[in-house]
Length: 136
Image (cartoon, rainbow, N blue to C red; front, side, top):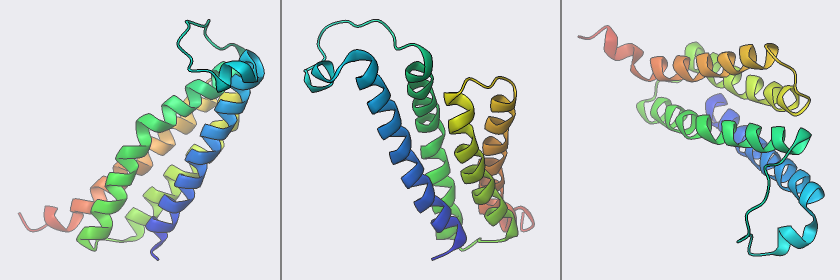
């Protein structure tokens, strides 16, 4: 398995962790009867750490599909290089650090870490077409 695919697998586990943390924190705030219900009734927004974990999950879900696509593009094209390895590693590492930063409400640094993950995706996308840039 390539390093990029290993980072994809690790990111899948991280996604699961996001889901479990957000779900359990919402249940703690709203009660397990709400969790087991059909959730048809309007409820106030989550607050505190539960709200931050919900937003962190939503943020992860916004970037994860692009990361998945970028890893598959690199892999399908056979363009696994140092650039793609760094990109995949930066994405996973930054997303791993981002979760506790968001959960504990750390400003500014959290946004900087988000940008590192974004750069990681950009590096993967660049790696997927890099050899093609020289052949035009």
